[in-house]
Image 1 (cartoon, rainbow, N blue to C red):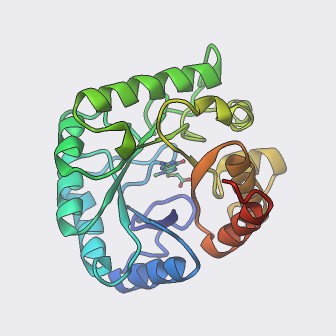
Image 2: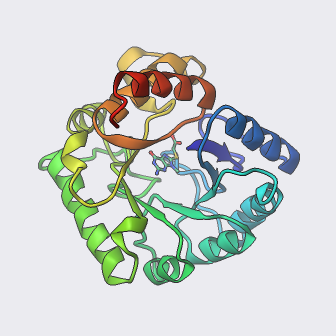
Length: 259
Ligand code: 8Y7
């Protein structure tokens, strides 16, 4: 899953892909490098980011999705938690919903069910503005597993079959470095909920905290973490640097051809 941010304040490439033509070119490049899905996001979820209105979010993402639709052959994912953005994005050509709130917003479950597209349910403790202020868990792997289990059940009760769900532990979303490391080591314990696992580790601050590397020097660690996530059961990896990530995972697939 290649990341396409169309926000002015995204932490890792803020402001770089703002124009529609640039966004389309970047999506094309990621598809050519082997991305199987392009994730378009119009609201930054970095710690401390300001919320945006549904209209503002739609103004950012809908023109890009319209331009991509029919132009690239890989499915387009909409990274949003807002039902009205989900509806507009799917109408414009998105075929996947990536919701960091796991369909907890008012009306999101019913909207996603009606739209009939696959959905990624991600774990987050707290909300982006404050989530990194002293996150706490009883047992981070068990707590995240219980949360995702409950959200899978809620989605199914709303009419979304498990075959249309993806689950994600939400690395960095209300987690310390140690929480993130425990989740990565215990990722296999999220198997058995009936949905494939997505992992987003690309350029995240856990790399900065662990290795003292600035954003622009996190490529190799990001690729290493992507391989570790797949080794531990992830089947979709969300990444900024698609070419290097795909090459590493192709090598992984040669070593483990049965997967
Ligand atoms: C994730 C994500 C972000 C992630 C899923 C970033 C939108 C922060 N991270 N969605 N979104 N999983 N499913 O570093 O880990 O890209 S935003």
